Image 1 (cartoon, one colour):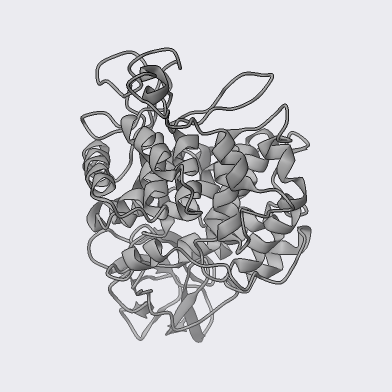
Image 2: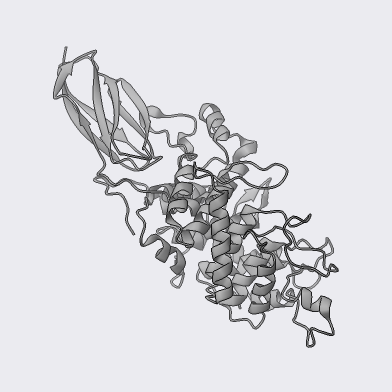
Length: 469
């Protein structure tokens, strides 16, 4: 895996554990395993680790005693999204462990008590997180998440011909709840991942039902058909079978992480990857679906990460770059009200623009957390610079009050930085093509050597110029 060469190392990695001051610190789990699929996907592409690292640092600092809290209550779903995101970033094992320590004793609050209440999708996601944390989903705080999930997965009938409707939804997950059944395709994909990794005898049926939710064009829909409907498959053009890029991306991610290498899965992944690439805009962004469909970092990050795992490198890098452009980094002389939240990712560009003046509003912080938790994944494929990070002055000396050109090299595409000399500064952003950025800075008074700086979120480079009055 390649990262940009950095001549100066600063505190970005150290923040990974320091930011946990509000959480519960425990030793990192010895058996936690980074995703082999992610490692393999990144081995052949030149990516920059900085944006995912600073996003992980920021969101770790948003934990309260190891949990995400929304409206005064633990938000277990967002907590697990955060944990799965952190598990993808080297150096953040302590954050995953803090989440695990807080979540494990309360797992039944999320998945149900196993008697009156038992929720299939959360069982699958909890099992996925437990593995990422180095725990055993068969005994997670005394709960066998896999057995519980198998109970919520429809069995294959002994005689499918005699029970055609039972055969039609074999492998489908169902919630058991007094509030109703809210299981959907995203939950199904987590269930497939959990059952397959556990070697469950119900894994194949669950996988086959998930694949029924893929339409002919390659996308996955979000919701199942009603249980009494004979056709349980996605049928393009019919109500209820609309394309959903988030469900598609998560189906791809979880199928890959299920480690099912069967031809039927390979074919499904190829079709889904092609559909995601076709939906992606030239900018790298991906629009969500539904009545309020919009371009946003959540959908783009999930789609980009899915395409990255599929080794669709160009598309993944484009998505990672677009997400990075929505990660404001305004530091040093370029400070804004967002500086204290460096690393956070905005859901949309307009959110970032508004927050530069007044900071992240209290009632908008939850949105930034949700955006960042998933953005971490897409940022894994943010492209790196092909050049060495440095700043140069075009002149050795100049007079006070002159505007002199400085050249910056080696900023990664979309990376924010601040160029400065005493009394003047300019915000700059890494180019998509080429690495040289040229800006003029106003020289201060005083007969002395002055330093020209360029500072990023976690690094700096400097040069010198002689100033004469």
